Image (cartoon, rainbow, N blue to C red):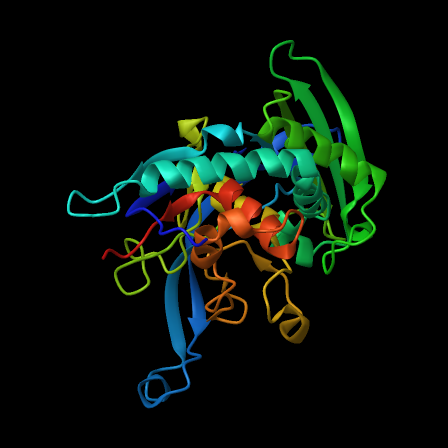
Amino acid sequence: MAKKLPAVLGLQRALVITDAKMKSVLNDGVLKDVLVYEHGILGTQNVNNKAGLEKAPANLQKLESAKLDPDATALLVSFEIRGSDISNLISVCSESHKSTNKEAPATMKKALFDFIEKSKEAGAFEILCQRYARNILNGRWLWRNKNYATSVEIKVTKRDFKTDESEIIAEVSAFDIPTNHFDNITDVEKRVAEVLAKNLKNEEYSILHVDATVNFGVRSSVEVYPSQNYCDKGGKDDGIGRSLFKLPLADSSLINSMGSGFKVVGRAAIRDQKISNAIRTIDTWYSSYDDMGIIIPVEPLGASLEVNALLRIKEDNGFKILEKIDEVEMLSDEALFLLALLVRGGVYGSSGE
């Protein structure tokens, strides 16, 4: 029987992910922060409309860039991830004071907890986390940095939260791990997945430290790619045409160390949301997957920026599946998508009566 969603259903995300720091690897093994610089460039106009064609060809811009150290041999990108007990996922579940459906919150809570317990018994967490593990090990989360790489070596270290003891559980070449399917899961992927699954089921409290060593085939000051900030004000942030995500400088004396025309503004990093989006790019369960052939991030409406479309707007959207949570068959495409949706978190609910 279909359940009416409560007015507000808020779910906490169950994967805790840090920002990924970016460091230059030097010949002697020393690591140095990748710095973000503010500078100007003389570009050219590339707008194909009347206004653009009538402008002068020169295009003066101020932007931010990140480059490896002049003595660098590679880029090291590191972040940490752990699963949180999914039984604690409900942050709010309530009805409007005008609603006549006062039993909806209690009914939905019970249905969610029952679904989680059934998923544990069926082995759904292990299947889901194998997909997360594949995206960690194939370096999808490196985004453009991987596109320019000649090699990417991924190392995953498991650290016990209580004892602080650690062990390396995976060392692979990212290019050996598929990005276009989730078949033939390897033993090393299963080891990484097992840690996340036990975290989510509250059976173990361990942290995964992930290191990616990226080689670009050239050495010295090659450009690398932190996350980019959203810019309001006509696409510019305080006059900056391209603003990069950055962590505060550990040494403030670096700010004016580059001389005229260059300014050090922070340490390069990839934002946690960007990493999360890559890791949860596992949805091959939507109805048009066979026709579209692209793996999309887990989103209630199947939002894909790659094709600029919503791919779950019919009966397979997250809200519809939540409404029939009691009827979902364990380990079906719907059940795995729903479990991934719970891990993702977010705010769900009805639009009112």
